[in-house]
Image (cartoon, rainbow, N blue to C red):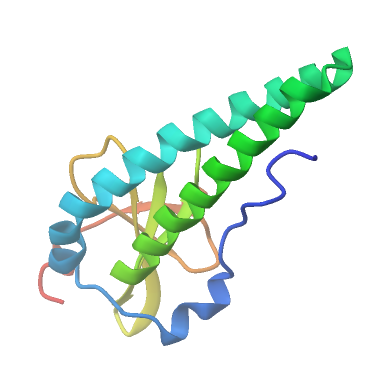
Length: 147
């Protein structure tokens, strides 16, 4: 079993048919999004531990314990998929399981962009161009309030 084969991130090309958030809408959704993302980060940590455990047991030749870890790994993977689907139902997109990075499709100055939030941040204070990724994050300015 290679690392994290069972979970994948959605394709960003699907953004055009998704909900677009205003800054206020995205911030209002954070009460629920924050809870879901905290669960994702916690479960992803468990997944990493189970992956290591499974590999260790396999290397030691302990097939029974490796199978047990593999079964729990599958359960956690299913849980992560369900949590990601909850975010998708809200209309946002998980970008990073380990750090809890989430994008919210939006429009700014007539362009499709992404509002960007990470677990631990109080509110959405960043945005980036669709093709820029989180490294291209820019602060949300006062011009967002009017949109």
